[in-house]
Length: 182
Length: 191
Image: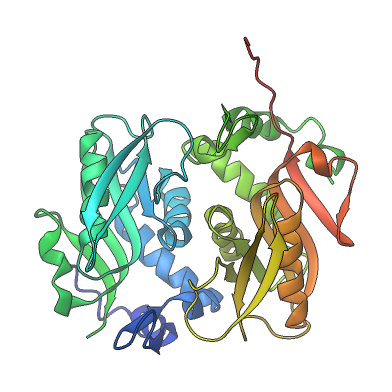
């Protein structure tokens, strides 16, 4: 499910602030750079507001953000809707007891970790990242939350690359994005 | 340089913020008492208070840039930037930022590391604040200051949630004011 928000006047401004950098991090990849969005206080605020308007009052107590760009969007959303922020990190960054979830990359594997006890059973959670491509990382994030017995309500990203069909890898959970890039 | 000496003496929010920070012994290696701010992020009121204290301080200082140091500076910086109407500039480990960057090396206990910033993220004359969760030796913050100054920005202050004993007694870092909310909490050892 994705909400139709193309008629919201703020969307155009947000999309126009995202910079595409060709051949990064390797040839033929058109990298969607959100740092230029962060340089425009109004557009950055609009980005956060769109998510906050959607999730406020929905009894969401956890916003989980994926390292590292999910750390930029997740906390402002969490603070505005009264939720806790839970960072999901690359291996060996979180101190203390963690649970780990491995996932497959184009070449090889990677791993995401979450603190044991960060999330309680039954909590309603969002997963936030700047972009969804193949959906592998988001799926790993959802798995971590579900292993802690939280309920993943929705995944939220600024950008979707629909051609990579990441939406289909979210185990039937809904995805909400602000802009699509083909 | 500590908030309690800078107008917030006895502010109950500081006590709650301090108590929300978890101390993990021997991480990432033996002898280090790691100050874990993730437990602060789990406490909505304490997290909000942390951001509000910084926002109240910087709101009327004509700050147009909040620069946050990867990765824990990203957890605090953007909320501050949004509240004061400033841009947020991520300062990142090498090869994470796409496009043209400037790079500044800094010394670690063993070896060196490097921080990068996008060229054109800041304009000459912009007033900037640098944010990180914690300041220890100040090496990373110093590199951050140099990056901003190389692009002609004026670093008004460096702000951290926690300041380790190494910085106690120093109210400035490389000539720049340092603003810190809390000291590390000590925990009892049984060995």
